[in-house]
Length: 384
Image (cartoon, rainbow, N blue to C red; front, side):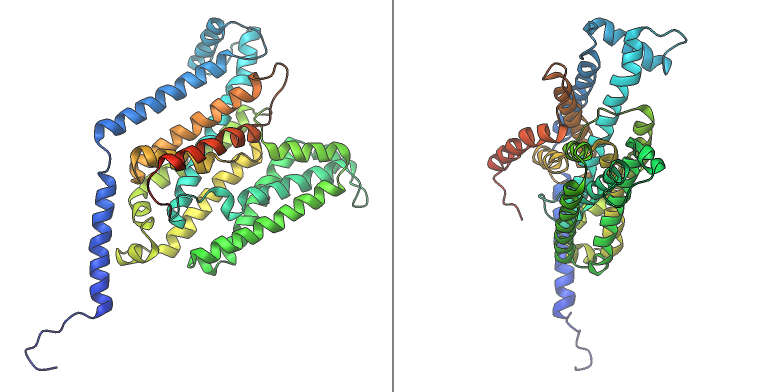
């Protein structure tokens, strides 16, 4: 090179600069895709719908109290923080059955939708959902194992202590452990989160193995245990209480705050790993953190509710069609939408048939599948 001649940037450097500028323009465009008034209108509509769903769910049930009486009692219970020394029958039903069930449904739905939108950013695909990393199938193995070991002597005779301890809390703890372990296996064998395709393939393999394990445990279980395994996988909030709701809140609320705090990084990550690296993001560390946080939220929710499908897939997709891809608005919309979806699904599960509590996963599949298909047909954008 001659003296005085200005060195031209190499192809890689020039490409990085172009990619960085293009990535910034795309992120800026995404953030400004929806007007402030339109975004505010969507949030107000979701919040109003959620409040109406909560009030409707609190006032309708098998007990037979009137809507006005139930709403008045629910309002007094919420304002007072609980029933008094001599609660009425309506207050007892609301505080011990309906309100904790509503709270658990809303929190679990919000957590599933949050996990869905975060994982869609990680994988760069709007069709990603929490089951892709094996957390739901791993939780099913843990719950099935706890049920079988606690109710059958197929493995040489379970002790009386184990049989007596295999209640809902043991099943929930084993389900949580199973979901966390399955996700840990996916993370440990997927090249440290550097290769998205490898993560997906390992997740598919873990899901297949867990499915086989659940089938084996169902086969060797007693008749009563087999029924419990099957119904647990269908999902339900029938056993909800305030302790369960509090645990889910402790796990979900910090995750919501953390994801909203890194919303700008999620915007960039959704553009692709190469663009995110050019813009100064440690992609591997960010992916690991998001996968760990979403696995914790989903495992906790699934542990108490069973497997609930389509919430983590349909809600983020619908919110993205309404608001665009900017995660600063997408995340709170998914929180409200997920809570609304599970609240309405649980309301339908316990009121559609008199004296019956329908499986929640069945309802979300029946409604979510056609709804997702309709959303895909309405969207003119290609799915990458």
